Length: 474
Image 1 (cartoon, rainbow, N blue to C red):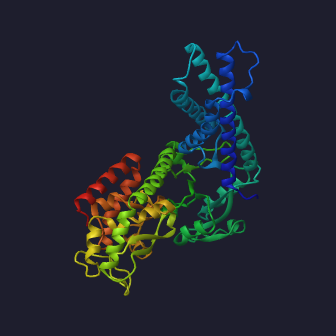
Image 2 (cartoon, rainbow, N blue to C red):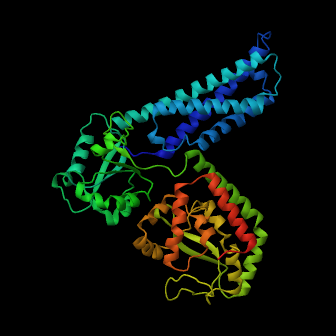
Image 3 (cartoon, rainbow, N blue to C red):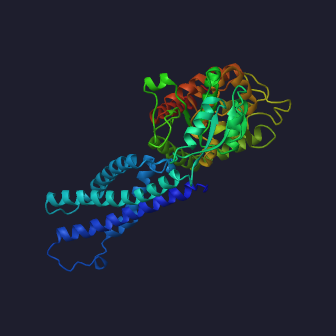
């Protein structure tokens, strides 16, 4: 089986979209010259390189690429449906052409509005036709490779009983593949099935489920549990939802009757789709653009503040200016969070310990910084690196996560998104002083995950700024 190269696939799509936009703009320029200057019979584009044409050749294709990126057109590049792509290409073509005409062409010299409408329809038709034709070629080629099992998605079966074996046989016996490439299974209750084990290897139990997914670069998970394994279903789903994989499940007759079963491919076995994005693709992309832009601007503007705080930290107590600590981020991956140091050096020489009111380890200046959140300012660097977001659940250390999940197994769901500099829980609770407070704060993070939106992020940022200005942080 060939190795998938998603970045190369994205580059192919972007290149063809760029070429389509470029050709459509040049053809529109020629069409309008012929339409408006119809008395000129020997029109030569090389002799008529007007600023509008040059500007369009440079800017218009980039505009289209950015529009497609924000809309999520390059997301899940190997899972594209030709029918859905037809709809999305039509919608984005209409939106993009409307923007171009209102921004660039509305104030142009128009002999009659009939010519204006003709130009609009001409650009829409040519741009859509070229763009969708190129995309269809890419999508058809990819679909053929998937159906012929030349490429596939690393798939893990959770379960090893009769349901799992039947699932494996049903999918692998199909003449055309829907993309599943089985690499192993997870044992739930020890219902060992020698027949399944002879086909694919066991990759452990649900205790090391997340590790198995990350280590083997699993892309899809299919849950096939036996009746006696259903009590473990919630634990399985919570753990799998903390990873970036697609989640599906084998339905029972009740699921089929209630209409929960959805098919994504006519060649596939009917399965229940359990995974969903926390935000629409366009909002997720806009959120990341805001994160990067705002963090870059903040770092530039705050350079004098950084310098003043660095001097104050250095004078307040001996030791380094910054404090780097390992936290657990998106999909359970560790990263180094950057903060201004607020405690004495070797504050945790006897092991991890949370701070509290009147904690003697906190320096006098550190206490001030914590109250107005100034110690968090270097984390804009973490945001630029992609480790964090402006808004998201606060990242914790592995030491405390192990204790939290004992009381609240659903904590794993926060790994679905990037952790944030600020969060709803941080605004409401501030710094947690013990694991019980971490668990109490968790409910705000879960509510945030279920209601993620740019609007909610904006509200949290406003409340964070209010907390900073009032100095009311804990």
